[in-house]
Length: 72
Image (spheres, helix red, strand yellow):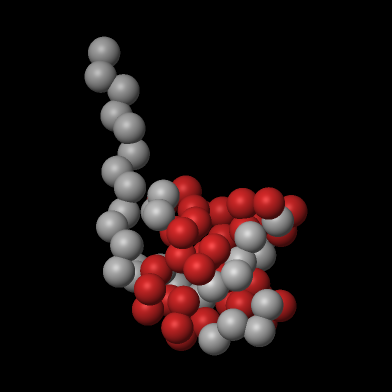
């Protein structure tokens, strides 16, 4: 799944475990932010003066985390 600017920060973190590294490299402390469940990537970038295109480029290089399948 491609990451887009209108995705919620929480959803990006949930789907891509390494996204936190990208966020921190750009100065976003999303894991600690109360808005990570409601704010979009675009809003976080605007609030932190980050070019959304640059962070999207890096985020979309990440591999998606496959959900754990409960094997019974």
